[in-house]
Length: 315
Image (cartoon, rainbow, N blue to C red; front, side):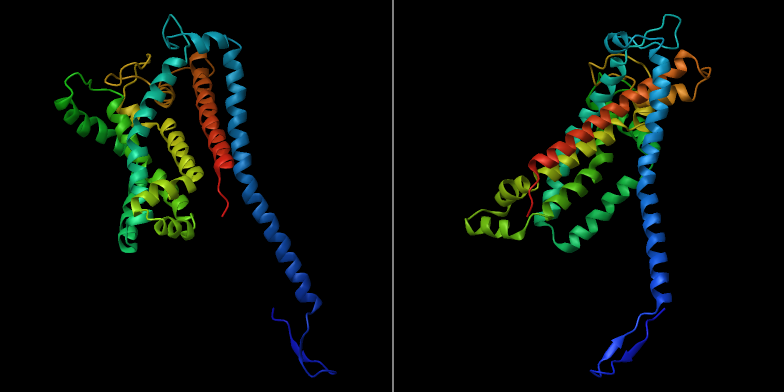
C-alpha cells in the first residue's frame, strides 16, 4: 500500500500522510519476517542438537558395555568377530593418515592457486578458473572413489611397486584434489579482503609482487588462510566414499600409507550396509565411532575459531 501525499496547509509543502492501516500492515509483515528469520537461524542449531543427542545417547549404551580406557588404548578393532576388541585408534590412525596426505596435497597447491587468483590473475582468467574449481566440488565422491581405485592406483603401482591395490596414499591424494576448491575459495577471499593500501605501501618500499604476496598479503590474511586449512582438514576427516572404495576395509594401525586400512567413515559405511542386528554391541559401535569423528571435527572447528580470533586483522 502506498501512503498518500497531501500539501501542508501552513507551508504548502508536500506532506506524507501514513494511514493506520498501512502502519498496522507493516507491523504484521515485520513480525512475520522476524519469526521466519529466527526459525531459519534456529533450524541449524536444532539439527545439530538432534545429531548430538542421537550420537550421545547411543554412545552411552555402548560405553555401558565397553570400557572407555580399552576403547582408547586397544590396538585392535574387531567388533564383529568372536574375539571382540574395540580399539578406536586403529580407525583414527587410518583417518588421520589419509587426511594428512590430503592436506599435503591441498595446502601447497591451494595456497599457490589462491595467491595467483588474488594477486596475479587478470579478472577474465580468475572468472574462468573459479567455475572449474566449483565443478570439482560438485563431482560426486563416489566418482572420485572409483577414479582413485580403477585409474590412479594402477598408474601409481607402475612407479611404486610395493603399492597395494587398496591403500591410503591414492585416496589421500584424491581427497586433496577434492578439498582444493574449499581451500582456494576461502583463502582467496581472505587475501582479497586485505586493503590495497598495504600492497601500495609494499610496492613503494620496492617489494615485488611475489614479495608483497608472501610478506604482506598472507600475513594480513593469516586468520582466513588458516581457517581455510582447518576447513579442508575437517572436510578430509569426514570424507566417506573415497576411502570406503579405494582404501580398503581392514581395520589396523595405519603405519604405512602404501597399504590399505579402514577409516572411521568407511567402517560406518561397512557396518551400516551389513547384517548386524539392531541394538547389538557391534551396531552400537557405529555411534561410538561417529561420536569420535564428531569430537575430532569439533576440535578442528574450535581451533579455527581460536586462530581467527587471535590473528584476525581488522582494517
